[in-house]
Image 1 (tube, each protein chain N blue to C red):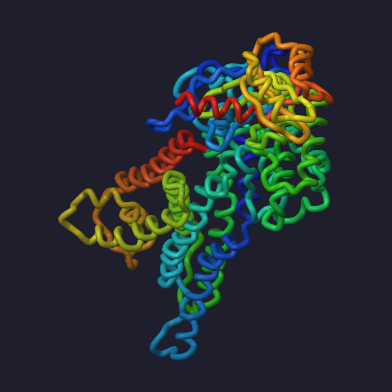
Image 2 (spheres, chains in turn blue, yellow; image 1 turned 180 degrees about the vertical axis):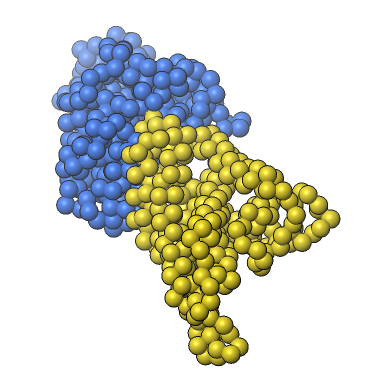
Length: 316
Length: 254
């Protein structure tokens, strides 16, 4: 990988108050975002949340209305050319001249990069498994092959940062699994991958860190584990009489919600409350309920995502 | 100028087989058809139709090369002007950080490197027919051929640049071709014939190219204008479409 430009140690993406409007509609609303170097960062949000718009602003495809940003430690748009020289990006879906072959399309892209980019064409094609089809016209490629060719085009920059917008669109299951390991390989090489997606599973499996975005605002950010565990504490109780257990525990002031699950009960507790497992167990035993197990529930990123995005919807 | 970008532009154009074939048909093909049909008439009835070759008949090939060649220029120029945008590749080129103006500027020499050989080949074919079918008539001198060639190249290259610039602004190839052909084939001849418009007609590209044509006569309407004014108008038609196209390329959402 190429030598890092000035700013090593700083976040690889840093935005402060970035706002982008389309008429009256605010697509990106005063976004402050820090993406550390050397990780896979998921930018997670429902369709229309503003993910692609922020990416387009970062890449200079459309200007921001206000705010400031730095890419690879370099201020944008002042040093855009220098910053983007080490960035590979796919926005929405990769586009190509369909009458040209895969290799010829990469030659066109390499012409926009430093002279060394031409020497990276064959290794990039090999890395994405397209060497054998490189001489075929792109119009004969499947969607998955075009995605891979798009990634090969990103690699021509020897990128420190890859920005991939919904990168698994059009990939079959095998292609998605292959893509995950490919991203991890890139991160292991010391590169940063910024991946926007509305697919929670994808982000949870690929990324180290993530931000959840909706209505143009970043709602939460952190490691994937932090995000998943950042909601209200939840426990699962295995018992022989879920109805009685629910009746008994709903009287407890710390219990916010309850619901029966297979073989027991799931409880959502008030955040920060010091309810002990022993206290719950004691109440159940006193009520004559046989308890098999009590354990913290693993909250998935999906649940966390739905929790924060619906909360925003409720505020409005 | 970045030679790698220029080379990439020529690669993109010359690999577009349909575009190259149609451009060839509308330049060389048109010249061949004109001369063969004209000579066919001569062979069929020599007493009524003279040979198609010779210096006096050469202007037919030249006018055809600039008229139908102008159509070819519109097809090629609009392809250069919009194909990056319509294919979506423009966005992928912009994210490399390369200046949009540099990307735009590299298109001009890139397309000329593909276009000029086509025009020159068609012109060479026109010369060959003119000499081959002269039938004893005097043929053009070297100086005449040079002047005629420069004029054909100039007219077709301006048409190409205008097409590229206009389509860069419009962003749609179909609409651009319609606008260009409508302007050149319908509006311009009409306006040239409205004498009440006076000197404003001198601003038309056709008025200027006709003023500097190296032969007399011809089928195009002519208005009296000075050589200086004609040169100024030609420069204007080169610069304005390029400037507007460059501005639009630099400012459009990619």
